[in-house]
Amino acid sequence: MTSLLSGKKVLIGVTAGIAAYKIASLVRLFVKADAEVKVIMTPQAKEFVTPLTLATLSKNPVYSSFYTSDGSGEWHNHVELGLWADFMVIAPATANTLSKMVSGACDNILLATYLSAKCPVYFAPAMDLDMFKHLATQRNFEMLESYGNRMIPAESGELASGLVGQGRMAEPENIIAFINNDFGQELPLQGKKVLITAGPTYEAIDPVRFIGNHSSGRMGIELAKTAASLGAAVTLVLGPSALSVTHPLITVVNVVSAAQMFEAVEERFASCDIAIASAAVADYRPQMVADQKIKKSDSSFAIQLERTTDILNWMGSVKKQQFLVGFALETENEEANAKKKLQKKNLDLIVLNSLNDKGAGFKGQTNKVSLINHTLAVKAFELKSKAAVAQDIFNEINELIDA
Ligand code: CTP
Image (cartoon, rainbow, N blue to C red):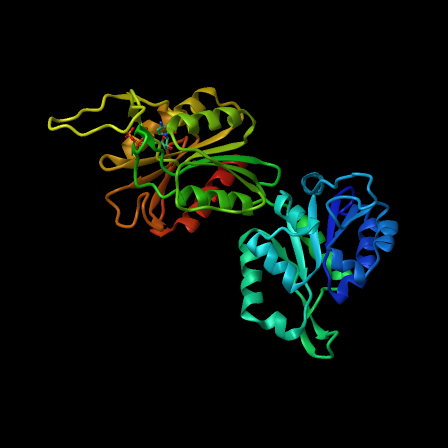
């Protein structure tokens, strides 16, 4: 049987822990599984295992600084390394490196590569018992998992200090088994591209004022996180929102106005497989934007508005292979209006939320939706967290795509 790792490009990041000596075996196992391996090390990791050993075993140069120190002027591009890899494994991952990964510190080539990597990242912690148990370390594990990184659990046993407990780096065979198992799980949206609009838009009146709305962007962010957890490569076109998201499979494109949101969607729609318009896009914008702050006067003041492009409608009019999902926020004749919208905008699915339902809508943490598909069948759901609603929406999308 050919290995699931066969042909995969693996970037191993070695940090300065005693378990670094086991990385020679890890490299061997990856090479035996027919993977292509490159190694980067923190400068201190070289005290534990030599770059020569790892270069010889991986059949590739080992990187431990941003440039070659022999005066040749050769620069090692961490961005290219990050893009090269199908996945990155940081092993052993010391408490120090884990904490820097959490904060985004970037004082060596390994951390710079980690920060720029778009591929899945695994980390195999290795440290002494009490460091492992410390709340700071435990919190760092949680933070990294919330970034979408995958922890390969540390094992229990005798540690370098002589203490016995959890903190030993997983054995190389177990690291390979863990990753193999991950690759074996065919995720439902693996290889699919998902485009999501989210948040409000701000339409400028003058340099200091705008017309906006109360959308938080949360529903769209939860949809992006769900799609990424199902293996999709997600582009989230996000209007001005106080919320943010970090995940290796999510690319965030920040926009402000409806026009900018349209431009971002127009550029990306053709190549996506699933598009979801969850943004609360302004339907109108001021016809003229004043160059200077508008001064008050005693008389009344009117702003002439003009229509913005209906982004969802545009997607519906040009769509080919894409599965297209829209949202409808209704206050009366909810189902009938949502069905009309689904047909008019040529959608495959519409998510209806009614402002009459307590806890539903675009401001809070929860939502209560009905999903209406192209056959006009309606599925009504209970009030749930927006994360759970996102899961329901993707369950329905996957069911309809597979049907
Ligand atoms: N939408 C969009 N671009 C716009 C306006 C809306 O992409 N300029 C999308 C929203 O993201 C949402 C859906 O269209 O998916 C909402 O449809 P819309 O017709 O705007 O409905 P409502 O906002 O509910 O308002 P109305 O009933 O006034 O049409």
